[in-house]
Amino acid sequence: MKSLLSTTIKRAAVFVALMAMLAAATLLANAATIDTAPATDSVGTFGFPATKLFGVDFTAPSGVTQLDDATVWVQGALTLGYTLNVCAFNGSACSAAPLWTSGSLAGTGSGNLDPMFQTIDISVVSGQDYLLYLAATGGTGTGKLGLSATTGANEENFWFQNGATPNPLSGWSNLVNNQVAVVLDFSGGTVGDGGSTVPEPATAPLIIAAAGVVTLALRRKKIKN
Image (cartoon, rainbow, N blue to C red; front, side):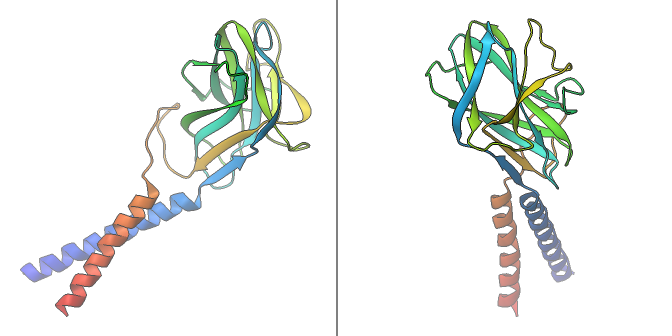
């Protein structure tokens, strides 16, 4: 009876390990990146007194369910406050309120186009269009957004909105042949609601641990035989 119970437990452990490996492999298979870096030029000006909304459009790649993080290149005064936002995009404006908004951000004052990385972790729909945009929130001074060397692309284009009281839900304008330098990382994991961060399983350690369980079980079986 004890031997049967031990065998059952071992088989269950191997099954769980194999399922973990399959889940990890699925996450890796569904990973995708949009990368138009490096930033070789810039467009401006953004801030006060200047244009309050700068953005870049993108389409969620096939098979993904989550936008993990984003990097854009920003040159901004230390006194310039802004947020980074993501909204669903209908081709001319945000179709609803932002799906995610960062905490308060500020320019570095370095005079260079510095990478600005943000963890996002929100659900996205494969094939859906979105807008990643900077919104000036306060302070003084201006900044610029980094552009890619690539031109003529249908996506990752530069969008902006002028006016004293800009509204992301109203019409935006874009500059033809101006592609923003941006890196967007996607995966097939699950997330929480409205931009709350839900850590994903570390896929590499998960695969290693699962493989270790399977190897140990097979080794014990070989020794027993």
